[in-house]
Length: 178
Image (cartoon, rainbow, N blue to C red; front, side, top):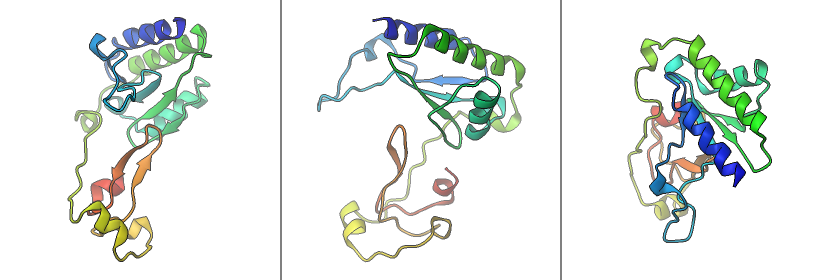
């Protein structure tokens, strides 16, 4: 319907951006695809936006979109923000977000530190099975004191709700930085 067309147009227009990155980027093959369990494989309505190549972290982008453009994002992470959209979003709302991202893209310059790809996958060192970590001896400590320890809990950023730490993994500096 109209909502899907608005989203498609938004992603198409954001394809012109040089320093601000907008995800997900879908191919036609992704449309309507479900996993074997019947879960939608992709959700176009959750828009992940990174301005890392423009020298901004997630919180700076969140604050700029809110304060200058009066656009409320769902959340800020270390390297990106997430905008949740719905069928109730208007053409004007999508246009305002698109225009804000185009403005940010034009007004910023790429920094040396931001040349790496926007988001790196951090793979933890697996030290034990999930079951052993969850059912074994545990101790509650502050996250800030946990480097080098073995996790007995999942740690998530929501949305999208994908764990960045799994029971049985060693807690690294990279995980704590995320």
